[in-house]
Length: 185
Image (tube, rainbow, N blue to C red; front, side):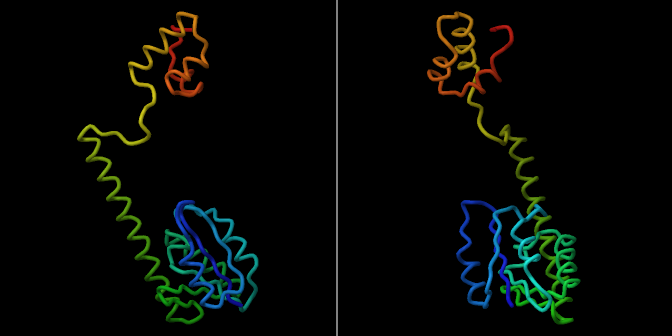
């Protein structure tokens, strides 16, 4: 029996392409995850492996859908092999039920890990360059100095309650309490 596995990294992505390819490949049951490839905790993959029996084949659309690190991929394939389950990747036409397929699996796994390392390097270099130009990453601050000054003066005055201050400034109570100085209290 062919058992499909589909993974998308975020809720905003669409797994339709993978699902269609898995159905076309004859997968009778398909498991899926919404999780980063860097994370090894993927419940859909665990369920697919637990569901599969000796002689079955776990089918995925691309090699990086199962995992990005070479160690993770090899561990997964070794678990499948120990249970007598084959592994097939549609886009790379990889099938671990053959010796040539196992060789190609190791080569593609190394390439996928190399690609991930390159992406991490480029991201790191981009962040470093942005910091050098004075740009910081992360969410923008909702409390600038002006808002903070207004919030503190309204709070010290005692005439306006915290809910009204937050509503006026467009901030949450948590943001207010996180930013308000202990001197204002």
